Amino acid sequence: MNRIACDASSIITLSSNCLLWILKRFENIEFIMPPYVKKESVDIPISSKRHGFDAMRNGNYINSALKVLDTDIELRDKLLNLANSIFTSKNHNFKIVHRGEIDMIAVAKKHGIETLLVDEKNTRLLIEDVPRLKRMIEHRTGRKIEINQKVRETLANELKGLKIIRSSELVAEAVKMGVIDWPYSKRQLLRSALYALKFKGCAITEGEIVELVNMVAPVKGE
Image 1 (cartoon, rainbow, N blue to C red):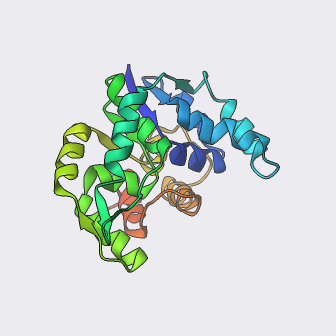
Image 2: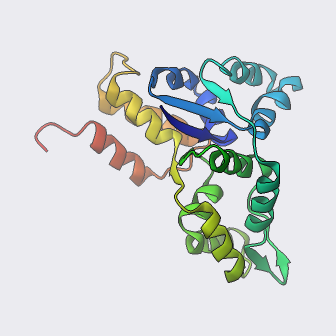
């Protein structure tokens, strides 16, 4: 059975759109949640007046759709330190990720999982495109950012072989498979679902939405 490690951003995006149930419909995939992601998406917000019910909804899917596996705390702390020292600004390290995202990576590495479900952009670009992440942070903050090349090489070696997917790709596959089978055209259904994910936190561009819709449900005659 294939396994996918999830971070809090993807779980919250799916949950906010009442779509966590689709995880149970991928029969050959086991979705893994590390302990700190459970803490972020269930344990901490469950006592909140604003987010308590959402946390209960997330917790309701633990064991049925999401399995919690133990992490490698030493590896997690090492990766967290590396990730948050890869960029510097005025000789100070620039924090770009939090413990939950790194705990997902540590769990994946400990248990031999190659695919990560991540909606948060910083983590995805940290794995896929560090120079682009640098440019994005510079644009967002107006600061000049430097890359610590030694840290970058060490981290790249640690992250080698990991593949990122987003909730958008997962939902697109669910629509394609007929898992989400509502009485609307697939193009209309998928487009609306992808925009809903975007507005709830999935880092996907409008161009990527068009591309996914055309891939899953091309216009007849094309």
